[in-house]
Image (tube, rainbow, N blue to C red):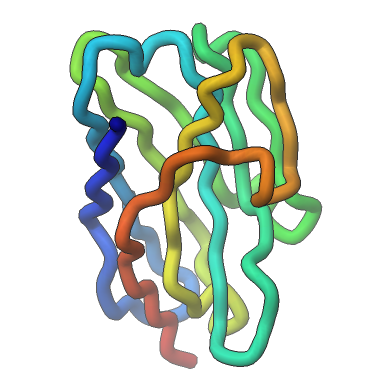
Amino acid sequence: QVQLVETGGGLVQAGGSLRLSCTASGRTFSTYTMGWFRQTPGKEREFVAGISWSGGSTYYADSVKGRFAISRDNAKNTVYLQMNSLKPEDTAVYYCAADVRFGRMEVVSTYYDYWGQGTQVTVSS
């Protein structure tokens, strides 16, 4: 069983920045693909960013390319999402997720096996 805990959400003005962190329990974090997703009320959970087990590959939704950056520190069992130039439409609950199938990199939420509880990000205009 893997537990994921997100921190770092909050309220920020448009144009500002936030960094989300997600720390995992367990000893095999370094083998997981990690992803960040977000969800607003009444909408499907959408992919934001993903990172391979080594950190060597990253991928982003078009809506956040050039503004968000995903990274990981396997020694700390932690994945990060640096969010810059935030817009009101980035307001959502952000979730981190782990895909335990080695080497797979997917943008569809159903491929991910473990989820955090979510952290609220609110961007005011």
